[in-house]
Each structure stands twice: as C-alpha cells, then as structure tokens.
Image 1: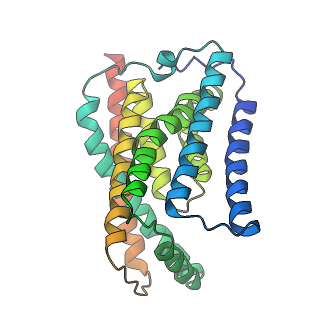
Image 2 (image 1 turned 90 degrees about the horizontal axis):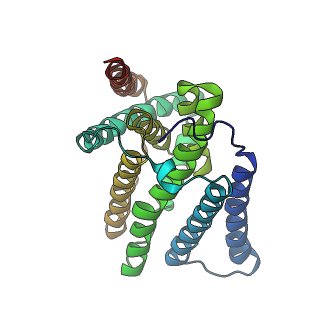
Length: 274
C-alpha cells in the first residue's frame, strides 16, 4: 500500500457517512426494542451488525470509486512473505500487551473508585451472546471473522491511517487510528487499542492490508469461539479486587508489548536502509 495514495484526498465526509450509518443502525435497533417492544434475539442482533458492516463496506467502495482508487491499490501486495510467520507471534504479543493494559486499568480504577469494578463485572457477565443456535454461531463467526476484518481494515488502516500518516506522521497516525478504532466499536475492551496498534504496525511494515486483515480475522475468530464456549457453560461470577500487584504485573506485560513493537520497528527501519 502506498502511503502517498490519499495525500491530497479529503476523507472528512466519508467518515461522517460512516458515523451516520452506525448511528442510524443503533437508532433502528433502539426504536424496535424500546418503542415497538420487539424482542430482539441474538440472531437478529448478529444480522443487524452484519448489515451495518456491509453498508459501511459499500461506502468504502463508493469512496474509492469517487477518488479513482483501485481496490488493489488500497490493499497492496505484502513487501515480504515472512508476514505469515510474524502474524501468530504478533497475535500472542498483542494478547500479552492487552492483558497488561487491562491489569493496569483495573488497578487504577480500583484506586479511584472500587465500585466501578463491580458494575463493570456485572455488565460483562450479563452481556454475553447466546450461541445455542447453530444459525447464530454461523452468522456471528462469518460476520466477526470474515466480513468485519476486511471492512474495518479498509476503513481504519487503509483509509484513516493512510490519511493521518500524511498529516501527522507514523506515530500519531498509529495512535489516532487505533483510538478511533476503539471508540467506533462502542466497546470498553482495552484490547481493541492493542489490536489496532498491532494491525497498524503490520500495515506500515509490509505496506499491505493483507497481514492486518489476517491478524484481525484470527483475533475475531478466537473471540467468537470464546463466546461459543461461554454460552455452553454456566458462568459464575465472583467478586474480585485489583491491588498493586495488578499494576506491577500489567506494567511488565505491557512493556513487553511496547518493546516488541519498538524492536520490530527499528529492524524495519534498518531493513529499508540496506
């Protein structure tokens, strides 16, 4: 992927359209559930998410066509084939960094207001998806592990990061695009930030969306399988409290993640000079 591709391209209205589609979809679901008192099953919600994602993909295609950008140009061809071996390592390290970040945040929340942890724990245990239906399982995995990674990598790394890179440089483009990726998911899981950063790093290193799409898909597939497993069990919640050990362990794990990205980035810069 050429990072000069969107240098002079305006993307503001494109992202306004994306936000509108997301907001409109959420509004429709809210009206159906609260106003018309229609019971939304898990299958209905999964289909709604899939339709919103497809609508966003159509906006991506419209944007590319309007600016005379080919799909192959925005995807790009990986500069090296070794990304196949780097993806599983990056996925594991991303999980390590995510766990570290979660532990740090838990310790900080415990320090500021311990009651927040109780509310967060109850909301997480009550928001799991009922995967007892085969139809729901298939739709969920198809949407999360195939459609979402393709569409979201087009949006957040292919277009957003590319545009931000030309305005603010590499570091800010990675941070900003990852934070927006996190916010747009309307999900308090800090892992989304680390996943966004890892995907952005792979895009920059290999000049292609293919490695980030695969990493994104692997993560979403694992998450989908976790929901399937949780739905077959009877989850039991037990109160817990974070202490300073959470912060110390979290700092170590998150530092390992940052160090991995830094070393890989430095190696990437050296390879370019050779």
